[in-house]
Image (cartoon, rainbow, N blue to C red; front, side, top):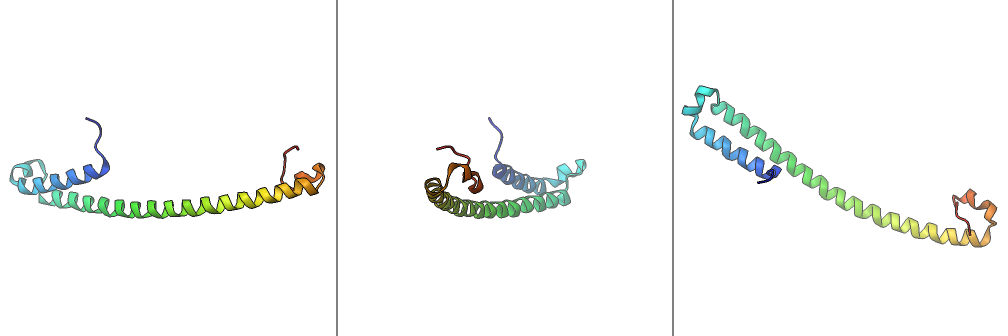
Length: 104
């Protein structure tokens, strides 16, 4: 089997903490006690919270990417119109002044 996803690891770690709490009398000899399980649950909760924040940021990034792509396409369209006019109205020797490196 392949590697577990982060979500599955978080779930499994939460289950592990519950199992530690339920069997702490046996595990306490190895210093895995209730405090260890509580600390593990705190870490699970932190991972869940951070994952939620990350997903929110991913959604915002997707929105901004769509917004950027629309603005970029609009800019390219406008620049294309200007490029055509400049090429028709200005001598080729002056095109570089407009950032146009093309040849006819």
